[in-house]
Length: 84
Image (cartoon, rainbow, N blue to C red; front, side, top):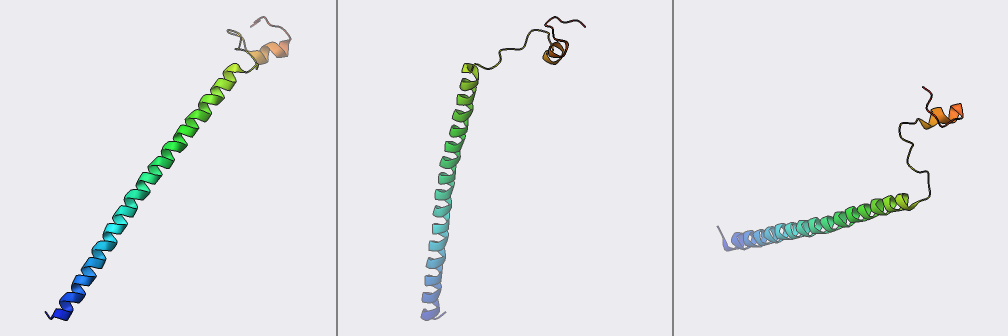
């Protein structure tokens, strides 16, 4: 193999190894960035759900359902007693 062919081969090999190393490092960086973004999104979702539950518990909405009573039946009959 001539000197010229060896130099061209060496340059091509260095360029190929550099590109492969760059792609590997870019992939690792992207993976770390995605992991950070997903962790932040999950934390935000958990906080949203927790604040919604806290707001629901502290709201002045309807209280718990009566024990053993069907609200639709009671409101249709106009009475609170269970007459089944």
